[in-house]
Image 1 (cartoon, protein in one colour):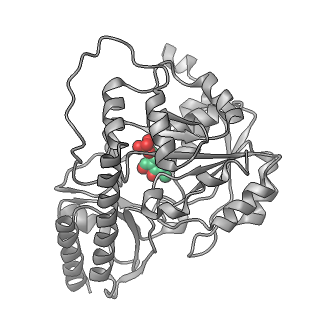
Image 2 (cartoon, rainbow, N blue to C red):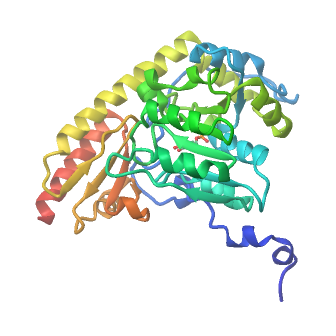
Image 3 (tube, helix red, strand yellow):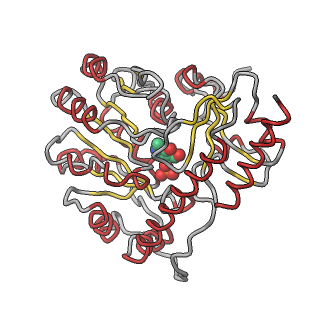
Amino acid sequence: MTSLASKLAPESIKKLIPYQSARRIGGSGRLWLNANELEQGVHYSEHASDYNRYPDFLPHDIAQAYQEYCQTEMPAVAVRGADEAIDLLIRTFCQPGKDKILISSPTYAMYEFCADALAIETIDIPLKGEAFNLDVEAIIKQAPLAKIVFLCSPNNPTGNLLSRDDIIRVLEGTQEEAIVVVDEAYIEFELAETVTNLIEQYPNLVVIRTLSKAFGLAAVRCGFILATEEVMEYVMKLIPPYPMPDCSAKIVLDALSTKGIDIAMSNTHSIIQTRQRFIDAIQNLEWIEHIYPSSTNFVLIRTHQDADLFNFLKEQGVVTRNQSHEPALKNCVRITIGSPESMQEVAELINQYSFSSL
Ligand SMILES: Cc1ncc(COP(=O)(O)O)c(C=O)c1O
């Protein structure tokens, strides 16, 4: 007998495969290097308070602190993570069953997932070659069919920064056609390359950010949308009634203080150094075919087709992310850069694997 829930659920939801977040996949292990989090917690401050009142509708002090951090006068709004920003933007600009979004795979899976959940089609113009560059001409050609073009820079899971010139060409070529969302979740690892300073010149540009990565606050759930007043006016229509829990807001304000930003930038600097040491320690192994250049807190590694690095590390209690399901990323594993000690241990394990498998 069909249940009521099954009778009521739309076809698009029935077909939907839930987004496989690192937590949802779960597993067991000692070193968790699969979700691009900061491995060690950051102690910004202690807070105790009453939580009986609803929080601010829009915490303006957070928006202002974030604008100062980004050195922009463009409106900023805090949401519960960049994931909420993606969903909100799609719901604001796309009509279910009618509109489309455009992505360049391999990229962050949530763009397509959020679109699927709303019965919004996704056009994919894959990134080109081993350098994972944008196919600018094809994107501009297809953009009139889409309401939103999602660009992820630096890109997850490939780790590369998109060329600023290419982003500008996309912005120019789509000015009358589509909103271009640039997801800068990892931008702190290459901060000078941000495109927030282009919003004024290109009103179709929207930038999304997060405190989950370089700021190490994944559990606090705080992301940002930066866009023109005109775009914000529509986003505000759909924003949840209380977008930021008070306990999160307090931690966010500490993180965005001068001291907090200094801590985050210093952690970022250490991760970049640890990343280089990790790459140096494994790059000469014969069975590692390519370590992709990274502008993030993770590295993507392509191995020889007979190697099974993901499962080898898993057996050793090191949880990473297998990317082989992506056609362009066969035999690829994505490893988050953890503490120097963790990465030394992982590098040693990887070196041992080379001896036992060849
Ligand atoms: C490219 C990209 N965008 C957005 C997110 C989601 O970030 P948040 O934790 O702020 O929802 C992630 C998380 O892995 C990501 O890799």
